[in-house]
Length: 372
Length: 177
Image (cartoon, rainbow over all chains, first blue to last red; front, side, top):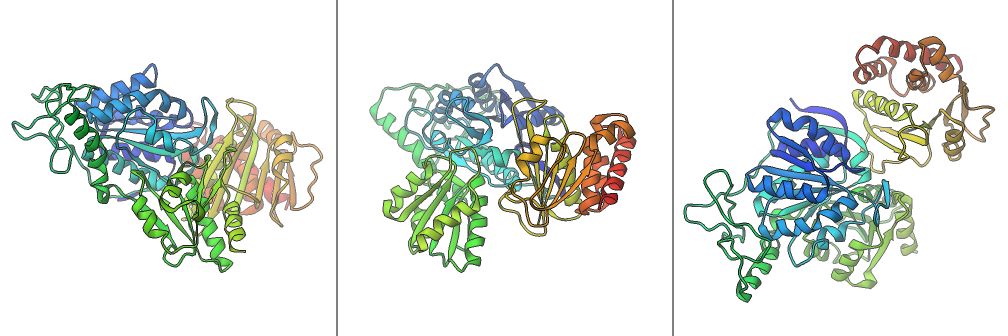
């Protein structure tokens, strides 16, 4: 039977991780993500999993890198300041191609910022926070139910593409309580591909993704943060370097049909399209309803997979609209990406950085001003 | 759609009351969203729980104009009764809120904390008394449903006293109508 409960987004995220097969968590508690650690500390031991509270976020990343290489599905959860500390090893996991999920429940920054208040200002950090060029997957849930379902997808995508996945929540979605229905059917689970006999640990398959030999099952291979060849050992070769950097992008870009996730409301005949994500998309949805009641043809494109950036989708959906509004709780991080695709004249930001959610009225006013 | 704001000082159990109310609404098959805000301290500081109950999907999770406000402190009363819906019900704990005045809405004064102390033996039960008053005044959910929701949430061994607190609230709420 399906199970219905009233839980926080953070709780749903933790349950999603368990359903996806996560059996290892290492982390350091931080508002507004702490409930994820709290729930997994209670639940993981019951299913034979391990929970470790580490001394800090750097060590937490180290621990989950190790656990994942040992064959476990492993995650951590944090917020802004912890996410900053994790960046070096997120880059390491990208290059060493270690499947992981890093949950970042965004709060106001910079630095210690506004610990108990919402924000969406780590979108660019999720993309570029770690030095060097690499592809990144980041997913953004908007509701409690989606925090559950999408967390399963995040773990699956990490396993599928052998890469760290950023699960980019925000304080509103993390802390709000809503109905969660856990379906009675078991979710689709993707497990990492194991190598065929003789297959090298970093030899990409036809899709650009190498198989991952699990330590502890008779395999041993070399893992390094230096650029390495298919054996896993470092090389200074310009050719190998170029191939590796390109592959880290292309294994994701060339498989967008598996990664791309979005939702839309009244977008088919929209003259004014709002692009939004996470908690702000909830305000945008209400704004669309209010606008339609006034006879304004407004629509919503809600981004669920935010990295790799869905440029083709945005180009297609915005081709016939008069104006595009980007609603987000930061100084214009996704607005900049949308502008890259559509140009400055077509894009109007609706931003908020005062720790308060963007209201539906604020978005509606922006649309109404444009219509007059 | 009904928008209910429960406010007080950290430690008065406003967030738990909000969760119980939201769970009761969920038990009645309603759509519900519950949010909260509080300061970094565990006790003291302003604390607020918001509950939105509707028959259809709720998008924006915050309340701009509440239908019902519960204010357990003067600070909460002054802060959250500025912007009310036309016929809003405002319930105040007259133990702490002295001479409240409203420019719109209906005011219901109940000595909530004093009742909890005198009749149930501890101010710890004031949030459950308040929940009873709120249901008594507004009938947002059935009395039987809120009872179930309270029992599902409170610590073992405290069920009887919590039910007593709830009943006290029901009666106080209905009497002042």
